[in-house]
Length: 303
Image 1 (cartoon, rainbow, N blue to C red):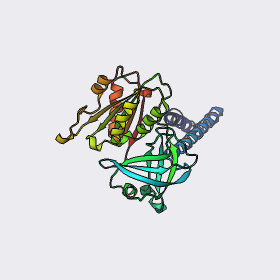
Image 2 (image 1 turned 135 degrees about the vertical axis):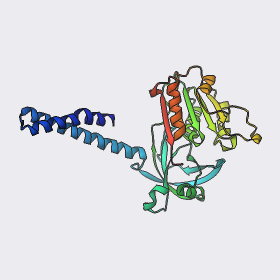
Image 3 (image 1 turned 90 degrees about the vertical axis):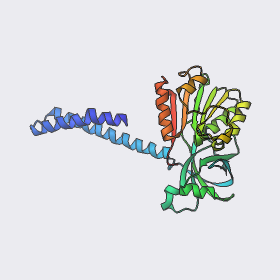
Image 4 (image 1 turned 120 degrees about the horizontal axis):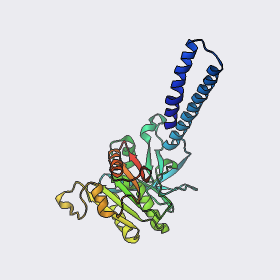
């Protein structure tokens, strides 16, 4: 898009004014026709780039990915208002930790496509024998239907897709910042690095209202015990007196990061959560001096 904009502002618009003035003066010389060719080429370039952007947008949405039928084997409540769903893994299905699928409830009218499909991050690690996803429940038609499906129900999976995956250079530590259900892609990554004994040093900052509302909190505590490269900093921001929480209670900010990290500019940061949280985290990290290329984000909207 920046190239398209620059091409339009720096080439197409000035060229149009210049050619219009030459035409008004009746100066149809070699210069006029040469510049007209340049304008046509610039316009064609923009059309090609716009087509490529549309293609990439369709790919990112998962709508063009091949689909496969799967079966719901079981579902469970994993936190207040949050459920996990376990699906059969199709033959040949392979994903990278951190990727997502488009899940469609079978048997729903095609005209209702907006309510029958959702993009969901894969919770399970690549070596697990099933596909697990999790979502916070809401009043959306899709989630109401999904939460009431019986074991054995048929669904359709498109994907996997996405590039929100752990960097390869293990010499650079990773910092995961998750809000609520934003933990899902990180679960796949943390399970994977533990199973494969990947040497990445990972610090997870995980924000929830209360322990009961924190998906996978107990498993994260166990992963920290099993893998010395994982450090969990969980924070609860809306506690009741009976919660009995001992730990961080503030929002994730620069002060919290500085208390738990040796250097703020050394790691690569990954942030997933509600759009407002993700935007605020990006601004906070930039203000702390973290380079833009070291901040990788995914926003959950419409939930």
